Figure 1 (spheres, rainbow, N blue to C red):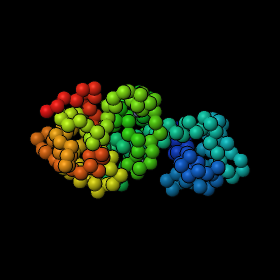
Figure 2 (cartoon, helix red, strand yellow):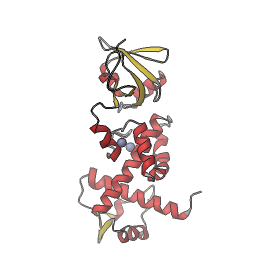
Figure 3 (cartoon, rainbow, N blue to C red):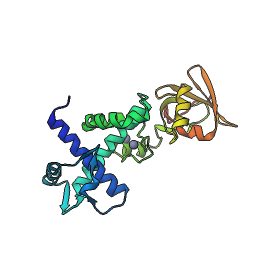
Figure 4 (cartoon, rainbow, N blue to C red):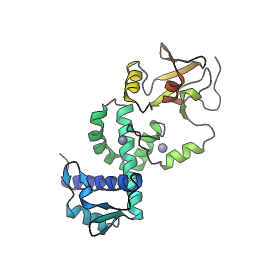
Length: 232
Ligand SMILES: [Zn+2]
Ligand SMILES: [Zn+2]
């Protein structure tokens, strides 16, 4: 059982997330009070006034907007939520139906920035959540992008003979994803690309697979040595 105070904070985060999705991704100017529904609960006046007192939202009659600091706070909350989803799907193999609930709880544990960055790094700075919505970038993602040789790349970008560990699988298609996972193509497994043509042939442990380019693009690999791939 969570304490009431924690619960209230989580509730406020959910409101910020709803506002961000409607304003930023839905392209709305403002959101009316009745559009904000957390789970099946209507949003209490109290929650709205707490957010207003903290300077995160502006209330104008029935209409609600995020302030600049509210936008930033909501962006970080969305980031934690979508990173959590990615983690549960890619690492813990939680089903897509269960993800929403566990992610909503776990995201609050990522409030410590160093933990958030570690998870992001572990997942290879993913760009999309399992629902194919963009994950707002963090400092760690910028740092990773400025490196000359990216650490995590689609398998289709590996050189022949290059090895690494599977970081995550991004298909945007859950059937495809399940198929890959059922084959044992899981985050953390070491992988070596043996051939690029006519199909992508690679080994995971003792098993050998051949996939088309689309599949090879969906498997993200953390390279063992980005600067110098050794040839077989
Ligand atoms: Zn999502
Ligand atoms: Zn990152």
